[in-house]
Structure formats: structure tokens, C-alpha cells
Length: 418
Image (cartoon, rainbow, N blue to C red; front, top):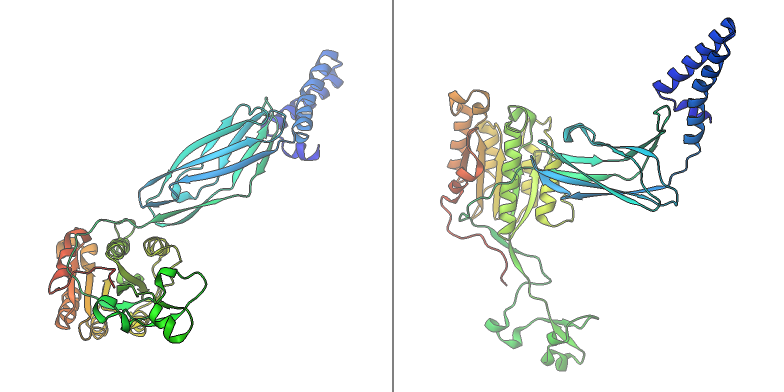
């Protein structure tokens, strides 16, 4: 009863106050009819509080996001599934789901009645113009009486996560070169080219395919031997994203930082589909990608990347230098001066391919000024060191300028093979 009284609405308290006033007037005026009215008015919220506080609904809730991962500006459908697991029908239910401000207003619904063991499904849509990982839930259910005098709130504990990824645009295929690096058990030895006698065998292990048994080695060593698994060769590369706050300009989805993140996502997915083993580096160092497949891992990481307070690319350059083995480095850069460009330029050596997507930051401040002096100086330093420079202005898209990355390329980037 105490919890029911605490759950009285403004209307319920108004009824109590009106009933008390009617009782006082009846006492001083000696009006018996007014006394009956006062008792009736007071009893209504008290009875409603007692009934609602003793109501024991048992509801189960499930939520489904379709799809659970959307690009910036995309919509996802949220489906709420409520089930009354008791043999008693519910009364009036007011349902409110918890969503972040970036996804819009909180959705609210009213259910008149859910029969015993009944199920209700409710759909609503959310969208976001901001990247990020957003929690949806928990669901709140408000139980009220038919007169709206008492309202109790119950909350579920389950919540789900919506990932809003950067905008990805398809890129034309260009000619790049990359260093081949193996990821298998041993370096590839081709039976067709080297002959059956040159195959490097190893001991048989539980679960090995019997079709890989090497009978000559088995006879030679007196134990079951199998051919080593052929190594799958693939290109390796690194993607550097400049996240320094001072190196970018503008606010919102069209800021230079958001354009840089979108460009990095587009390039990363394009190269991953071409068979490139890619690692992500920012000015803070190497990023650890989750184990969800390269494409999704890259998008999930870029969905949460934020600007940093760093003033230089020192840690990013160091991470690229420590990684080693890359035949391809692609840098998506904001404002860089000549000295920072020289640090990047030193990363290129031998046959390594370096591509610099250089944002013209001056264009985000005042587009009519065109390219700034710092932008031109950085271009000259990188180009002089053999980097392929891809200028990206505020009015262009990465798809339009990406073909410039092919300048000087001789080999089509492809994966697979042995």
C-alpha cells in the first residue's frame, strides 16, 4: 500500500485533496451528502493504489535490431516482443524504450490489454547522423489504473547495441603494388614445379586429411607423414588515419575529420575485398582490431574513433616503422607541415608503395581560398620522396580522386594464390 501511495499521480493527489476538502466542509456545514461525496472521492485513489500495488504481472521482453549495424544516415528497425507469461490478463500498459539522444526521441506506446499468455510485438525505427556505438534499452513498463490515479514503473534489464559505422563509398579498382607475406605453416613449395621428392613433410596429426599422406616419406621415416599445408600468400599493408584535433576543421558530418574517417573506411574495405591483409594505425599508435573479420572489425573500430589532442604524428610513424613488412602504406592526413611530411616520407623504401590522401584543410575554413601553402608544401615533400599524393578538397569525394593513387603503379593488387 505504501508503494501504491508513492505512485499516486497528480490526478490521484488532487482526488485526495478534493476529498479531504469535502470532508472538512461536511463537518463544519453539517451536510451528510457532502460527507458521502468526500468519502467516495478519497476512497477512489486509495482503492486504485491498493489494487495496482498488488498487481503481479510477469512479462518477458526481447528486442531485435534489423540490422544491428548501419552506416551513418541509415535506419534500423527495432522490434520489441512482450509476452505475458501469467494466466492473468494485464491492464493498461504504457511502454517506453530508452534510446540515446543521437537516435531521436524515446519511443512510447500504449497497450490496452495483453491477454493471458499473450504476445505483442511493437516496431519502431531509429537513425543517426553520428558515428558511434549506441545502447538501446532497457525497456520501461508503466502500470496504471483505468482512471489514471496511480502509476507504477517497472524496468527490464536487457539492452542491445546499435553500431553506426562511417559512410562507405565504392571505389574504382586501381593498380597498386604490395609486398607479399605468408601466413601459413611454411613457405610454399609447389609440387608441380619442384617435384614430388622436394615436398617438405611433417608427422601425421590427429584430424589430418589422409589424402595428404606422403607415402615416400612415410616409407623413409617409418611413421605416417603428411604434406605440409601450402601457405596462402596475401598482400600486406597499413592504413594510417590522422585523428589530431588541431589538424582538422569544421563540425558535424561534413567536417574534415568525418570526411577523413569515411575515406579511411572506404579505402580499407576496398583493399580488404581485394585480398589485402590490413592493419589500422592512428597518430596514437596501432589500433587493435576485434576478431570479427577484417571488414567488420575495421568498421566497428572506425565507428568509435575520436579526435585526439596530439600535435604530431610521432607515435603513428613509430608504429608504422615497428610493424615492418608492409608493401603498401596509405595515409589519410589532415593538416601536415613540411617537417611532418618528411617524417612520413622516410617510411618509404625500396619497392614499397606509399599513398597519401591529403585533405586540403584550408578549403574547410574558406573554400574560395583553394589550397593552402602548407598543403602544397606537404604535397611537394611527399611526392619528391616517391609517394603518390591524392589531394582531397572539401567539395570532392574519395571516389572521385582515388584513381590518382594508381599513378606509377605496375601491379594489380590481388590476394590468394600459392
